[in-house]
Length: 316
Ligand SMILES: [Mn+2]
Image 1 (cartoon, rainbow, N blue to C red):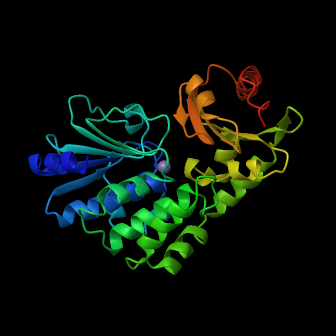
Image 2: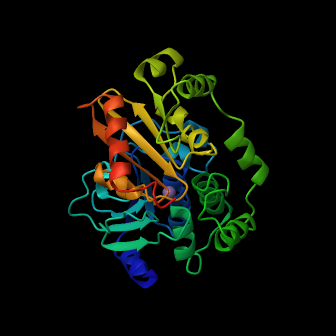
């Protein structure tokens, strides 16, 4: 595959690296890391993200300020990062040649070249393993890839973390990543509004099925009262799945037009549940968005109905 990739790079002078909507550290870190590699290959490169708010706490990543909100190159090669489906990229990419770099189980293989490995803990791990033997991974790229890995594995605590993941992390660190600076940026830059919205959201905790299922909701009112944005809710669901009895955690964010749902599990496959509701993701972490046709409680009821119907709690 790397041969095909290098052949594509020869064909194109310019490359647009595209990240998914509601960008997280994995999609941005993977993209910015590849940006650095291709810049050093003397390519014309841009990193693009469609709409929404960028997570500003990641502004310490090299080249973060260069992220564009549109694709400027019209005949470029597209590289997509960490996106399971083409819709999640937001841009109209029909008729474009796409290199799809991802680690989602639900990836639809929408690329011309699909570098997809669901055994990897982050898209940046996929990118690193794919590129490391043919391209120079310098300190900037290693920093971006490492940050993507740290955050997608929740500081190396998710179940897919093993020897191979830590080995890649170690290889990246050996490229000169300033780990103290990374850790400070990732743990000591929270906004006050993120703490306030956490507090309001924790008050909504509800249990179902003998406390094997738990839910948290961030309401529109909470967003207005606290001044927080969607970015400030990252990680809130982890409080839910951390509870001893909980097997499946559901987090609902009430947006203006839609309800955005994240699900976590410690053993049941919640990706099939997400796919049923029109989303996707990983076996133990997935999500979907839905129009506000129903209210939050109705949605919770219907998710719980599906959990029961599929026997997702039986196998636990
Ligand atoms: Mn990811």
